[in-house]
Length: 393
Image (cartoon, one colour):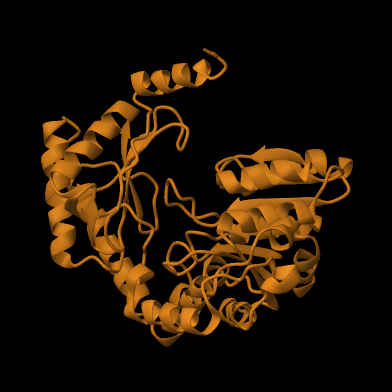
C-alpha cells in the first residue's frame, strides 16, 4: 500500500496531541441569537452576524424575489455574460453608501483582496503591510510578487521608518492595513497611516471587513469613522459579516475600479455572485441607510458585555469594538473552556495557533444587535461559572 500520504496522518496526530486540532461544529438552523449546534440549542456568541441581518425577513424576501426574477446562478464570469442589473445597482449603491467615486464587487472579501493587490503592484514594487494583517491580505500580497515589508502593528512611526529605508529601491509602493483587526478587536490608526502615505506619495489600502456595518455613521466603515473620504485609495469590504450575506467589495478611486474590471483575476476568471446574494446585500444597504437602530444596539450590547466581563476579572485585551477576545493563553485551556461553555449552553469557539500567535489563545466573543439583555446576562453567568471552575478567575 502506498505511503505517500502518511505525512498527513502524522501532522494531524501532532495537532491533536498539541491541542491545536480544530473540531468543526455543524449548524442546523438559521443564524440568530440562538443556534442549533450539533443538535443542541445554544446561544450564539461566535458568528460575525453583527447586526442580526443573516436571517432578517427583509433580506430573506429580497432573495426570494431575486430568484423568481433572475434564477439561482449567473452562469458566467462578470466580464463575459455574468454581470446582471443587480450587480450594477449594488455597486452604485455601495459607492454612494461609502461616499466614494466608484465600487466593484467580488464573490467574497478574500477574493476582493486577491483581485486588488496583484492588480496594483508587481515584482518591481513594494508592499508595506501591518504585521497582524489578515490571511487574505498576506495571500494577495504573495500572489502579487511584490516585495513584502512588514511594519509593527498599528505603528505609524515604524511604517515611516521602513518606508524611508526601502522606498527608493522600488517602482511603486502600497501600504495595506486591516481596519478592525479581527482577533483583537483593535482599530488601525488610519488617520496617522494616511499622513505617512501622503508625505511619501504612497497608495493606501484598508481592508475594512470587520468595520463595514460597525464603524462610522450608520456602519459606513473606518474611512468614515476617521473622516478620510477621498484620501484612502482603496477600501476593501465584505458582505459576509455585518451585512449577513456573502461577497466582497472594493471601493474608492474610479480609476482603480475600472482597472480591476480589466485586470482583477477573480472578476475575470470566477463566476459572478449569485442574484440571491446580491439582492440580499442590497436589502442590507437599504436597512442601514434607513436607520442606525441596529448599529446603535450592537454597540450598546458590546459595551455592557465588556464592562461586565472586566468586573468578573477576565482579560479582554485591547479591543475597542464589539469583538471581545477573552485571553486564556494556551490552546488546550481555550478549547477546554469552549467545550465547558457549550455544556452551559453558550456557543463561543476557541481560537489558537495559527489563527493567533502561540501562547495567545482565546475565546473570541462576538456580540451582536440580535442579543437581548437576557442573552447577555446568561452568557456572563456561563463565563463566570466556567472561569471559576477552570481557575481563570
